[in-house]
Length: 66
Image (cartoon, rainbow, N blue to C red):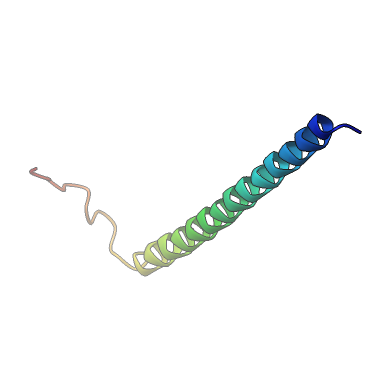
């Protein structure tokens, strides 16, 4: 093997390692987002459950002024 081939192999290995690090970071972000969405859905369900005992018709004539 000549020096150029060894250098090219080392550069390729470094690029591959950087791609693995970037993929790992993206997977962690994806897991964090999934966790946040699950938490938000749980909280929304709790809010819906707290409104289950509200009388019918409440909020139907809501006038929101921006």
